[in-house]
Length: 451
Image (cartoon, rainbow, N blue to C red):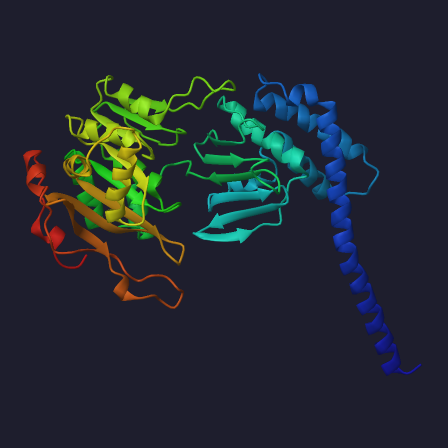
C-alpha cells in the first residue's frame, strides 16, 4: 500500500470517527435528559407529602430534595461524569424548589421578560428584543406545579373556575397566568421582571431614556405637587417611571400606594401599601382599586400613587386630585398624550355615573397637570418621547402643549439605534408660576436650545 493510500485511509477513519461522535452527542444528551426526568418523577412521588406542604420553608425543602436527588443520581447505573451529576442535581433542585427551567432566567439580570407559551416553548426578552430558548418543562403537570407555587404564596388561586390571575414573585416581578379551558395549548405564563435594586433617574439618563435637564424638570414637578400621568404601551417602562417619579417625593410626606399586584419599590419612610383582592371561590370578598382609592382618601394621604388606572377608579382619582390631594401620580395605557385624555373620559363613564362629557373634560383638565409618555422603539430601547402639559379648556376641547419631545429627525446609526434625544420645544409651561409658589424656579435655558 502506497503512502497516498495510507493517508487516505487515515482521513476516512478520522471522518467516520468524527461523524459517529457527532451522532453520539445528541444521543447522550437525550439519555441524560431521560435520567433527569425519571429522577424528578421519583422525587415527586417519594417527597410528595413534603413538596406540597404549605408550611415548609424553601431552605428545609431544598435540603431534603438535595439529599434525595444526590442519592438517586449516584445510585443510577448510567455512567455520568462528576460535572453531569452535579448539573442534574442542580437542575432537579431548581425544578422542585425553585421555578424549574426558568430559574436561570429569573437570576439573569439582563432578562426583562419571560414568556412561557406552553410547557415546551419558552421565550425571553433581552435589551428589548425577544429570543426563543432551548429550555422546557417536563410536562404540563410540571408547569402547573410551578404556577401553584407562585400563586399560593400570595393567597391567589388558578383553576378551571378561575382560569387567569395576576400574581407576583417575592422580588416584586409581575406574573400573569392563564390556563385551559381559555388556552388551547397548555398553561401560559408571562413574567415581567423588576430589578432587585430599583432603577434610579441616573440609570435612565445613562440608558438614554431621558436627559439630565428633563430629569431635573420632572423632579421639580413632583416636588411642586403636580398631578402626573405616566402613559405608554405595554412594556414601555411605565411602572419603572412611576417608581422613579415617586422617588422624588420628600421623605416627610405620607404616601399611599394602591396596586392590583404590589410591585412599586419606594424607599421613603412613611409609605402605606394597599393591594386589591380578587373574589374568592364563592365569588365574594372582592376589593377593587376603586374601593381602595375611596378608602385611601380617609387615611390622611399627602400623596396617592395608583399603580394603574384602568376602570371606574378614574372618577375617584379625578375627585381626589380636585379636592386637595394634589401631587398624585399614576399610569395608564395609551398610544399618545391626547389618547390619555380620551381614555380617562371613557373610564370615568365606566364608573356608572351619568355625567355630561363637558363636565368630565373640565374635571380632567383641572385635575391632570402633566403627562409623561413613553415608547419602546424599534431598536428595543425605551424612551420618554413626550412630556406634555395639560393647559385647560378651550371651548369643548382640552388643550395640550408639548414641553419636551423626542427628536426622531436625527435618524438611526449603523447599529440600528435611534440617535435622537428628548429636546425642549422652546415653550415654558403655564404651571411654572405655580411651582414658583412652592419655591421652585426654572432657568429659562431649561426650555430653550440643545442639551
